[in-house]
Length: 561
Ligand code: FAD
Ligand code: NAP
Image (cartoon, rainbow, N blue to C red; front, side, top):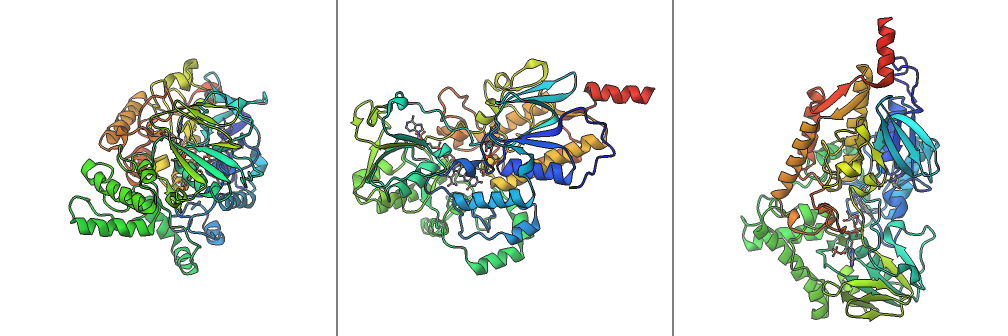
């Protein structure tokens, strides 16, 4: 551990220099960077009993990443040695393998010793007198720190079940987002699963292999396309490892952190034959290549979108034997890619199995989980042993609003964000000094290969802290003007896409009553990184950097005397 700033720092006036909330990809890297590279005193609070975040909580059968583990690198890039040492066994790693990777990272960099597990942060109040954060936990502890870093994730608060009667259900109920560590044995059981997003699609395919019967409750059919997972190819591994820096550089300089070099400008500018050839190629390659690797205008031009949407519909119809079931599984009333597309392995074929039933609840919503099953407005589905809720998350803002954050003048973040998030760059908030949001709302976040998005933000915030310290300053806070400009820019970019048309968690539309705004900066990672670099180069343009609080006053009076 190096202590670069020890000589420059005043005697400690806070319990810690930085408090980090969360120990997933973001929290682990933030701890390593701030503690080991900058010599700060850091405490991490993690609600779970172990490291891993998403990969600690989401242990449902079939859980795996859908950004390639190796080539496009769903992994850290900060340590060349780590990058060379770690071996991924599959193109898309499974949840246990990603958790093992993060566990290796935690051990390799001795991170666990500074993490308080099983400790949820329940309040974080800015103390103007001392210019520091007062952070409270579920266990009643209260500690102070100059900087508060939310590494609390975008998809870490499962949506509260909307159905009456869950407590009366006689069998077992599981949420994909808080899956039991010991696993669930579905053998011979009658299972009901609600939700057909990415989690549901993965879980359905696996649970159907073991359950005696699986009933799938679908409200909106999805455009799920093949993952095309396979074991890692040693030749490809060797080629990537020989060129990792350039692979990472290429990834960072694209829209979503995945370097597709064959994207054509418009689906409408080519012949139908050429279009089909491109879609076939992307389909065969699988994963995000199909979503974002064909034509540039898929998410902005409805006519271009129609071509890919129709292609997927055709594929679904080919794969499902019963035309009536195929029709139910085929999305028709929203554009492709305006809900986050799931990636699958034999998902549609699962509905050809005798032990799987599809129930379309789009016209007859689920109202109640009864003692024995699921009730919709027009039917009862009884004799269920296990209910699985794959109903998603209070995404992006949920984890931040649950943390009890209070800024200048006693204003809560919940009050400030009553009509949706207001941030500068998706990583800072006016009125909330020294608060950093790693992959916060209005940053590229969930539409940027997330380990890279996380590293970019942690690097930005640690550079900002270093800048403050070098210049004898205490606080960094965006101006309201910069923040308003960013919010307007984020919304304006979204309006140029097809995303606002559809009810999705990207739009906050999956939670009843949640403000409907685009939660993601859609200008792309490369553009966003350029904007952040300019902010830094222009002496943190858009931020106010100040000496304030009792430490500043002490420094000033020591200087005068
Ligand atoms: P998280 O991993 O969510 O960690 C946040 C941690 O903060 C959690 O452990 C939580 O317990 C803790 N926390 C939250 N609030 C508090 C509090 N108040 N007090 C204390 N602790 C708190 N992204 C991709 O780029 N590619 C993928 O293939 C991909 N697959 C995914 C699959 C699933 C099933 C899910 C749910 C998400 C997936 N994501 C994927 C997104 C994924 O969340 C990110 O890739 C990444 O893991 C986020 O890391 P994080 O550290 O920012 O947040
Ligand atoms: P999700 O995409 O929000 O899907 C939730 C599902 O539950 C939807 O089908 C939704 O239907 C349904 N649902 C919610 N409330 C319902 C209700 N009251 N009645 C009936 N159905 C209801 O959530 P998720 O599947 O957990 O995925 C969230 C995100 O996590 C993904 O988009 C992705 O970013 C990430 N993820 C990634 C992977 C991966 O492969 N790497 C895997 C899992 C998750 P409606 O569409 O009608 O709302």
